[in-house]
Structure formats: C-alpha cells, structure tokens
Length: 262
Ligand code: SF4
Ligand code: SF4
Image 1 (cartoon, rainbow, N blue to C red):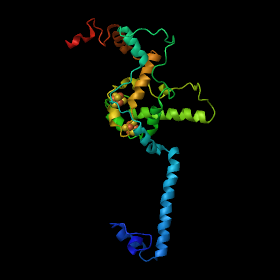
Image 2: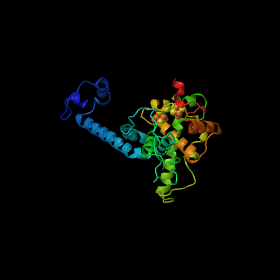
Image 3: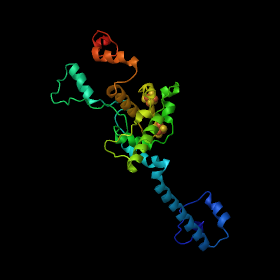
Image 4: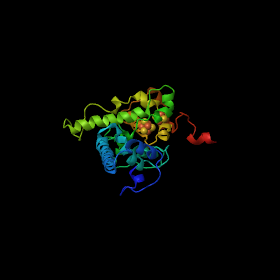
C-alpha cells in the first residue's frame, strides 16, 4: 500500500493482486507514518522469526532441511546398482582363480568386514541418516516391504540416526570416550537379521529417495559383517557359499562356470 501511495523509499515494484485490495481495506484509514511503523514491525518480526528458526534447526527434527544440500552434493555419481568390492575378498578370489599371487606381507589377522555400528559406517552413511526426511518413499517402493516382510529402508535410516544420537550423547556427557567406545550395543540391536535378509538388493529404495540417500549401502555393509565377520547367517545360504567357493558359481555344478553360455 505504501508503494501505491508513492511514499519515499517504497518504490513501485509492480501490481499486487491481493494487497491492492487488502491493504486499503485494513490500513486505508491510517496515516503514512503509522503504516510505515506497522510495515517495519512486520519486517523485523519476519526476519527475526527466520533467524530464530535457523538457530533452532540444528536441535530440531528439521535438521534434514540443511543437510539435504551437502548430502546431495556428495551423492555417489556411479551407477546406482554398483556395489563396492571388498579388496581383501577380491584378492582371495583372484588367488583362487590363479589370477594373483599370495601376498607374503599380508597381516595374519583378518580385518573386520562390513559394519556393525556407526563407527564402522562411513561419514557419508551418517550424513545420509541425518538428511533423511522420513518421507517413506523408499519403504513404499521396497518390494520386500510390499510383500509383508519386516524390512523398511526408512526405518534402517532412522535406526542409524538414533544409534548415532545415542553414541553422541554418551560421548558428549563424558560417560564414555570416543576411542574404543563400547556400551555393549550395536546396530544389530536395532536392525535385526530378519530385516537384513529380506533385502533383495533391488535398489528401488535408492531410486525412490528424493535426497539421494542410499539405505542399501548400510544394509549391504551390515550383511557383510554378519556373514564374513560374525560367520553367521541363515543355514539355507551355506550351500550357496560352499558352491561359490568350490565351483565358482552359485549352483554346485562340476561344469565350467561359463559353460551355460554355450
Ligand atoms: S534394495 Fe532392499 S531395502 Fe531397498 S527397496 Fe530393494 S529390497 Fe527394499
Ligand atoms: S525416501 Fe529417502 S528421505 Fe524418504 S524416508 Fe527414505 S531414505 Fe528418508
């Protein structure tokens, strides 16, 4: 309204479909000075509300609004179906196939494979957990969830975030040190083996996420830890593992692996 009245410093910037009618209806009887005072009050109220909300954001569940930007910036650009190899396992397979030689300097103790807690996940996994908007698109697209399995990729992300919060709070309060942190718990207390085994690694959750989060990466890392480090896993899978180890293929056939191509 101040613009249409031609008040100094309030330059006309265009036509206002609503304000043209609403302004005079509400403030038409007031002097320029009073309307300017109301306008200044409204301007400062808005800007202080925005700044106040920005300060509150890091402590609220709306933190994902800020983290969505770096999370998208650092999103993986390789094909969504690409799975990271484990170099130690790859080397073993190559030695088994006669493509590589054993390394004489290799450490006697096997490394830990996969992840069982937030410490063994990458910083990107944790950033993704805090960037999750909890929209549920991933779970809606998950074929395991649709067929009644216990798995929910949305819950996986929330479990990782909740575990990070639990560990962070214990370290911040001085109850535990970051080095060799051990409270007797792990991600397996929140994400069960049943959930991990239900995943078909189809990548539908990765495709569906609007902020480029990858729940499958965490599921894969936990499954690798369960199978390779804990030597656990469903008994039904053992014949398949043995067949891969002995015959080089999931089916325990004595034919050369590539024979099926013929
Ligand atoms: S990759 Fe796993 S968690 Fe993701 S949609 Fe497919 S089955 Fe569900
Ligand atoms: S689709 Fe992405 S943002 Fe939405 S709940 Fe799943 S992981 Fe979180």
